[in-house]
Image (cartoon, rainbow, N blue to C red; front, side, top):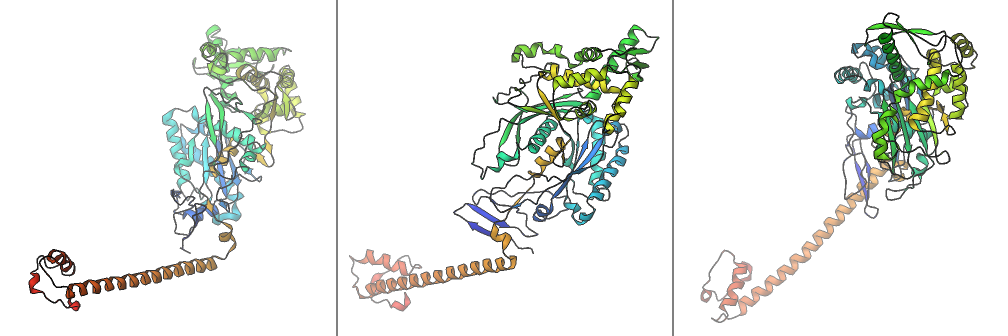
Length: 585
């Protein structure tokens, strides 16, 4: 019904709103300071309807190596307390496998990305087939990461336009979409979303917020949070809470809804993902091979396994080069690979940073606060950290030293031994299979990245997980956590939730009508009394005028009296008026 009922409680300084289907007001918190909450809905859905029925959302993670769609569910944002609690996704998340290749592969022919998007939308429609009538209320977000950040601006704009046009077309996408829902996110966003996801699942994000009952309550930030390391194909991210709160660069103020914010150090390094680093390494060694031995077309690297080779096209020399591992595997191949990869971290650029920030420096001469001790903070590794962790058969939490010992053993295998080792693994993941030739590279790069790039000690532990309590651990979870709490919400006190709407409407109409009638009666009574008093005063004054013999000495006084009752006269010859009938006054 198109009715909007406002019930005011001045003592609490709160206005409770029950918005009808045509209302644009979702919630009003303060009688004296009200701003309308708006939600631009593509299909012109009434705001209250959208708020009540928006309980599912999707995020497309468009990474450098492929895209995956995640489906999240949450409770409707309708609350019986004036200060809304934090909304968070439930533990029955579902997701697709990674659809290869990455979106950035389509930049020269953007129309090809539509096939991949169709597959992702079909998965969502199949998963939500029992909620078809609700699809138009379910938002879908497309967020691209490192692979797209590497794409030149004009090409990036072209393919993003193709993606937005497809998702904006209701015949292609039945879900709720706005143009701003599709974009290339920054590396810092990716890092902070990953931090939020990990700490949400570990219980260090929501729990302190649940103790805050109103906006004035203070919250002490838990220093026992987890830092997060995220390794992708094109970029790598680090994010952690600094107990001293002294963050000189890279500060990200993370806030959920209107609640407490966290000061987090975040940094993203484009071109330092495992695929980008491998490509840079291959480019360097093939360039050296072309320059030193232009006729051979052969390059050797300790980062590939013995007895394995592949063809790499060197764009600088415009020539294909055969790249292989050493002829004979060795026990120190792991150390040799780390030494070959170390220059790619560009630690030689730290001189200026060391001078400015007293040694608080890391990759490529960038400022980074020192890693907190193990006793203060644990770290969680996400995304591609899972590949070497799975292959090396490490427990979820292991020290970096334990990781290095496993990597050293793996690097000593020739390729045939590596295949036998891989086939003996109890579980095989598609990502593990595609990375098979690069296990030595993976182990070496993760080790040099952690110890020389970020500055971890080998005794520090790292916890690597892919799923936790029914949720996939990754930045998309942190992203939807942020998006949910940015949605409008409705304050509906218990009386509105438990009473029949018709009864409530009748009660309010009755109260309003009774109040109006009482006000009119009292106003009429006051008006009648005032009129009677005025008439009595007029009669008294009139009698004075009639009974008084007007003399020259009284003329001035009574002239004003007469003018009061005869405003049309400006002068009077009082001698002519010896009697003034009161009924003429």
